Image (cartoon, rainbow, N blue to C red; front, side):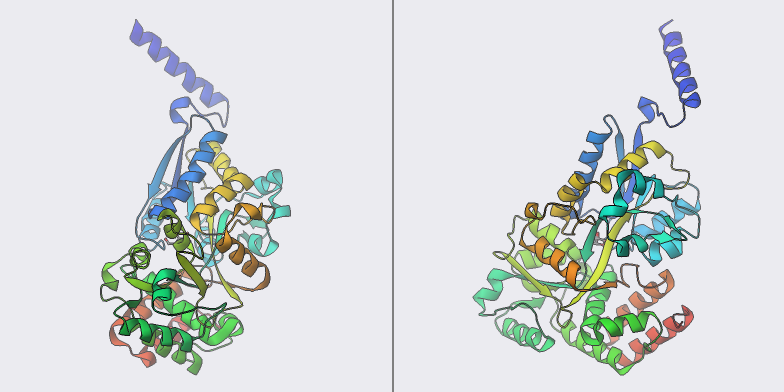
Length: 422
Ligand code: GAL
């Protein structure tokens, strides 16, 4: 009898669910979010978004689908297999620009979410430049939870103080190398790199490239107006090679956040990395301007390499209604304030309360407002997936052979194959 009652209740629930669209059964009230946020700072920030979602959607069970490794290089192939196999998560982390618009949208994996932008009033509070990076043919395909700055050089303040090194508002390569020499002589490893995933050292090269060619050169390279085997690119490779001479010996065994840990522990002095690094410092209870400091990567003052994090709505999302609530939360003011304080990025909304953020975030918000905004190649915004892969591979080869001519040749060849020239 009991069995029968249970059965008929389940049948009734199924019947109701079938008849009322967008109402999920309690047991089916799930949400699967895919990302590569597994480091201490990343996981804490992601959890802030999840907590806000649980508040907005009581009873929702969140499936936290992550693939570790950072930068997404290990996660994206897993995601791609799921998408191609018709088994999408409800929502996944993506970078604007090429990664979203050149990869996921043409493959028909995402639903446009213009109606959410309208109902939430996001068009009025998110800069148009950012919305444009998420929009194709008038359709917007993701909401940005935050905007990272990629071209930062972070340092352990106490280590530098102990060695009599002062960093000003900006830094030249000459100043970096002078500091690195001093540190090396004192037995401190100057530069921490964790390129177990080659994207992290590719990011060091990306930052050094911007520091050498400048914002205009950057734009010219990615629009085909400047050749990738230009002498300035070769110069960037040489400077990058010189920086590598100061990196930790175990760089290829470490993930990016383990390199940050070496800075936190004072084993290394500097690391060149996007401001998800801030999340690791915050998790370790390090304080802005007391325990750690930052400056634009040498030569890149005045430029802001955008590494923004968006979330999509999967076409055929298994839990569509929950996914929509999730996206609304990601774009909301409260959740963006909580999430970005922990993640290191700045909110994509401009109507947030700046006083809720500390010195680093205010510095970054100020840079975002006044500097040249440039798309990242390593993080998928500036060029196709094919070029990004070739870029990372060419840099990985350079780490071993230090051959600048070979590097620029490989980049020029990749640009040709990607038909980068307009
Ligand atoms: C980037 C991502 C950031 C951060 C970083 C390291 O691609 O946009 O949010 O997580 O990778 O994992």
